[in-house]
Image (tube, rainbow, N blue to C red):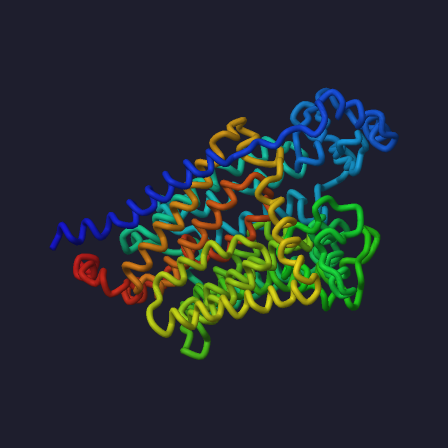
Length: 553
């Protein structure tokens, strides 16, 4: 019996290793490094000769230049002052500059400059630790909180245009959290070591009701700061312009793919729902250039951030209609504050990016996980919005049987049918091909904004991508073996976060805006507020019930 149990426990590991090995061989064999469109010296000469670029270079300090391929049709020329990027130029095969961006005189890369202020970053960081840390100090939970907070350094470095340093600063935190979440979600079920929330320890003389009142006040204040900074932001990210321009094109009867206005390179590289879901805003305020208003998109981003915090609160405290204790209410408020007090969330919301909308979608999918059809539909919508959530669909389906499996598959098929019907109705028979060709840029693009390029080990990227596929395979097999794991919200959130962080690590482009995807999931797993031993043991899956006597002892 023990041998059978051991073999069963090893099956997910074996499956993951096999998939990793096979995928690595395939990816390495098919990997093609993009080539320069024109020689480096020619691209540099063309960039310097352009009047706009020459003016930017004359007003900035630069002492080195690098050239890298972008997409097979364009080369990217970057001018640096040491490790600080100053000016970025795209040069085509005809030696013409098609886009130029001067970073040297920008106060912040994107978003509202207020969100980057040291006082706000420090204040939010302190609040984040107050609601996530525990005592005694020697608990892995505190290491988890510090790992999340370590990304603030990456944000600050990126603000000051230290591109490689920003990527390298984010790498250890991403790797730690990916491994930690994978172990938390797929490893053996264990009870956490005894601890108390730091906030409870510091306010031990105040009763639970008093702490709840003050937490509500704190949550309201942080939410108000988010709203004020987010809706008044003067510098949206290019993704926001792209989806609004694409939505404007869509309401005029054309697909965004190949029909976008000039200005933003590859603004049509997103799945169709990235544009379709913004068509109500574009109908009211069309966007055709960078001079048009994005107030609607900024408001959507702020609302999405608040929704993501609400999902974290629900995951920690449970639904109100089932009776919520004061302790559970306090835990939910701490979880919501953990999301909004993470400094990158306010910055991300102030850019108007779709990444914060995706965070809300993923949080909702987590809450619906025990209702497979609804969760599958949410993940399908999120996948046709931003692709990455499709990686979670096998994990969801693996734990299902019979009618529940059929319902979830039907939900994914229904959403996908509606998506393809939209593409065919607007773009005709060539529409799906045009969308696939445009979206493929995300997988083939060249980029200096990558951990692999910062380390100079681009050759290892296919291996990392294969490891992510292996993780998905291992998680799928584990869920198939033990369907009861799907009822443990914390473990589901951890597995989902591990997969999404793995995708970010293995990608050839990374920005701190992507952290918003996983903050609600990490809040619901690694940083999930403890509600006491009895409640924790009640959530241990049935197959681990033999641990209860030992834990109780």
